[in-house]
Image (cartoon, rainbow, N blue to C red; front, side, top):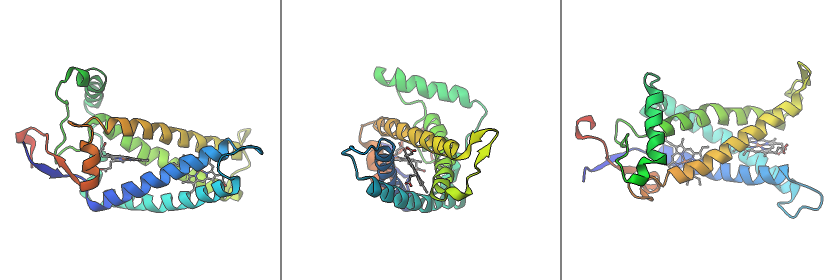
Length: 212
Ligand code: HEM
Ligand code: HEM
């Protein structure tokens, strides 16, 4: 037993649970609006629109906690990818998730205070949090205030393009969420990562020499 390490400070945990709940509401209301039809029995259309708009605004506000929290605390360093040798490390992690884990091999990037994300988590968290969520905010706010959308650009209808990018972003976040929930069960024990996100503490799995 190598002790515990405090990986998820309280502000990350509060942001994360808010973010998770709002994303779930946005996905459900978004899908409901997307497949709405006059005889549909899903969420009432005006209700889905209100749920979506309010959650979208709250998600944008909660993102500020994540953005500035990462900017002004050490948590942001976990999102900085060291590009040298990154592809190799990514393959190693993918091999572990697809083959190694089923052969009961050791995780190639054990969690510790110096590293809380494996390379696959690092790249997906960075891309979702710093590309796809901002894209959803930009297109979502534009759909809230359609007056700001350019009518036509290079022959493309601005509103249709904004709507398309918004749906694409929503689809990517939904797929991310499914994969995220599954990979989060791949700790030493299936509930380990979930417990860590609740308590803030994770078992220190790192090699003794890399511990701080
Ligand atoms: C996880 C995040 C989100 C998902 C999965 C999502 C998904 C969707 C989907 C599927 C639609 C229906 C589009 C269509 O069928 O044409 C939609 C519409 C819309 N979304 Fe989002 N969205 C998200 C975040 C946001 C945010 C952050 C905002 C605003 C700040 C926003 C504002 C809107 C608006 C204004 C519409 C048009 C319908 C309406 O008036 O409510 N969305 N969204
Ligand atoms: C029901 C919904 C969700 C559950 C149960 C959940 C669960 C977890 C768990 C257990 C962790 C810690 C272990 C790990 O890193 O794998 C985590 C971390 C994280 N999750 Fe989620 N998650 C949910 C939704 C989301 C959504 C919707 C997003 C983004 C759109 C997200 C983004 C993240 C990020 C960025 C981290 C790392 C935070 C940090 O320590 O800096 N999660 N999640």
